[in-house]
Length: 237
Picture (cartoon, helix red, strand yellow):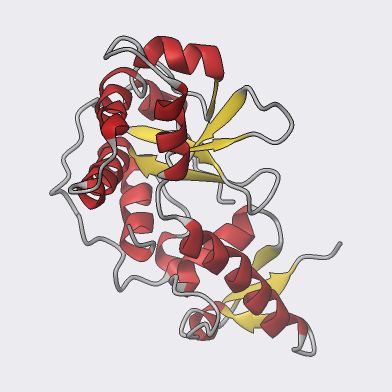
């Protein structure tokens, strides 16, 4: 996935109304190199429907492990993540789920205490117990809601996950394949960025610029400067 530069942001408070639509029409060539991590993430969010250690410690961001690749992670604003949990709770309204209170316990006691992408079963139960008496059914509710996923290697460990992210993960994988395939079919396995970023992907709902940053950051694609602009090439194995 993409790599972000060291943050130059000095404050711990976010101003969500600042440059909220930045990057909607800008070329990838204009903002390929970011000087401010917070601005970069806002641009990414504008192109991806809805890390920095300092921003994680300041409770601005959360990092999530993705199953699309060994080193793939998602970066999400903490309040966006909490809003996703609220949407899960809202969808459960009217259903006879007695354990729904666990979502409140999770929001109140877990994100501020656990910044890592995973958590051990006993530690999770300990944090949730600050809100009430924890039962196995509470954990099951979180897993079924997509807030947690159980690690296959260690059943006592869970990954924190983003509810309803499945379609986006599918789009990431398919979009990567489509762009690599498109470039690989060309004679020199390259294309002008200005032309490539205008392409509409058939297999992914995500902005093509999101996929280009993803593929460049992961090393699958590389950029070269030409007199006529930036060229995107498939990296050699």
